[in-house]
Each structure stands twice: as C-alpha cells, then as structure tokens.
Image (tube, rainbow, N blue to C red):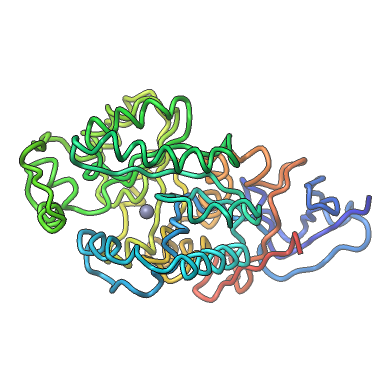
Length: 394
Ligand SMILES: [Zn+2]
C-alpha cells in the first residue's frame, strides 16, 4: 500500500503543536502510520501552508433545527428564543430534510468529523445513516409538569428505539434542561442511561438560576405563555439549577454540561464532589447570538475542567463550524494558547463522545481525517480570516 505524506507550517498532533519539520504519514485510507522528521520521511511529501489538525468534533448540535437558519432575531434572551423555537418547529418535512442535508454537508466541508447531536424526533435519522459523519445521538426529552412525565418518556422512547436500531452504541436518552424536566421525568430518563454519556443544557441564562433560587425571573413568563400552571407542582429549591438537578442524574458515567454561561466556582466545587465525570461544552457563538454573552472560560481553565466545543443549531448560529467557535473564543480570550483551543476542538471532543479510539489525534492506527487551517498568523495561531479545508479524505 502506498503512503501519503503531509508537511505544513505547523502540525497539531492531538496534544502538541510541532514545527514545520514534522511530516505526517498515513496510508491511502487515511489511517495514521507515524509522524516523523522531513529527513526521515523520504520522497513525495505534499507541502501545505497553514496548520494541520485532526478533524474537529462538534459536541453539541441540533441538526433537526437547521431549517430555522436566520429566522430568530439575535439577542432576544433565552426565554424569547425558546418561544420562537416552539413556533418554528412546524415547517414542511421536505424543507426540514433539505436543510438537514445542507447543514451536514457544510459541517463536513469545514472539517467536522463527528457530532454529538440532540434529537427530539427522528427527522435526522435518514441523513445520519448515510454515514457521512460520525454521530452520537442524544434523544432529548422535556416536560416540566409531572403529569406528562410518562407520556413524554414514551414518545421519546419510540425515537430512541428508531435511532438505537442503527446506532446501538451511540444513542442515549437525555434531559433537555433543569427548567424543563420534572423530577419524575428525570427518574424515568435515568433508568435508561446507565453507564452511558448523557447531556443537559446547563445554566444558559441568568434567569435559570433565579428560577430555582427564588422562583423569580423570565421562566415564569415562559410557562405562562405556554399555559402551564407551575405553581401547582414547582417550588424553588433555593439551590442553583445545576445543584438542583445533578443529584437526579446519577446513572450516566459522564455528563456533558452544555453552555455553562452562569456556572460559578461553587457549582464547580459541587461537581468535584460527585462521582461522575463532567465535560463543559462551550457554544460561544450561540451564547453571543441568543444572550450576547460568553461563559466564564478562564474559570473552567483555572479549575482544570474538561472543555469541549459545540455549535448548537442554525437557529442560534450563523454557521455550524468548530473553527468559527475557536475564532470567537480566541477573539474574546486571546490569552488562551492555540494548543488548548485545538485540544478542545479535537481530542477532548472525541474522548467526550467515546470516539477517541479512531478520532481526535494523529496517533498511529487512528483515522481522524486531516484538516488544514489556512491564514494563520506568524505564531501559528488562528485569525479572523482563518479557514478550514479537508485534506483527507479528499
Ligand atoms: Zn442546544
């Protein structure tokens, strides 16, 4: 079998950035053989300008919402955003399927190889079984009234079974968010997530903590608007939303906490006393879109939290691009080293979704795809003009 050899200005291995002397060697299928020096690599080395990286992992997406691109105004805040989403779910199936296919193609073209995708229905299934990208399917359940817990669970179970038939090792049922799942529903979900990876939207807005701490804030408006009399069953726990629900999510081995915009040191201290592994999934562009905010990223770094990146959906993002997420974070947090951003975008995501035996780094035997980031600066860091291009598979 012939070998393929690539040399660029920089090579990110999945743990460190090597200088231009490093050559990446794979077989024709893109399975990594080794990384060696230019003098050892022999002939036929393909020369590239930019930084080579393993393919990106998008740990949080809602592919089924792709048809909502550009429909929801920016900076409305989370509660008005949710009310928009509820209205816009009813599009024609043909439009929804076309938007799903286009969004997946765009992700593939900009270097994403794997996706942790939230599904409330089975509309993405026909696209996912084509195998263009690797998926971990998070089948999402919500329902804040205890009276509807069983019916919501049963509906989600049918979606879960449809996905599970095709993706038996990478389908799990997950709760939507602390403010939208009753203790009864948490219990039903927890019964089917044993030893698996789970996911929950976490502390995306200030009002989420206020709702649980004092019972005040905009979530009352949400439930008034949808006609749910929450006073009949909900009492504030006087804890943050995170500290309220974590004790109800004990079965999964690992939990992706998505957004974390209002997660505090006290919340992190609380998590560190639990037996589970926690992964902080940042969706910077979506936070900017919905709330014009960013999460306290340096707080997570100071606490050695595991960080991964997600795009959220096209309802709250202008593109599904992990490079664009990195660019936004680099713009507001220029102190974060490039190698750290790349770790979040590749190997940490692959580990979070249990895909690191094949993806996330250029270790021998893996097949992570090869992505070239062009238009980097003289220090090898991305700029606002950087673009990602898939080198392999061609
Ligand atoms: Zn989301």
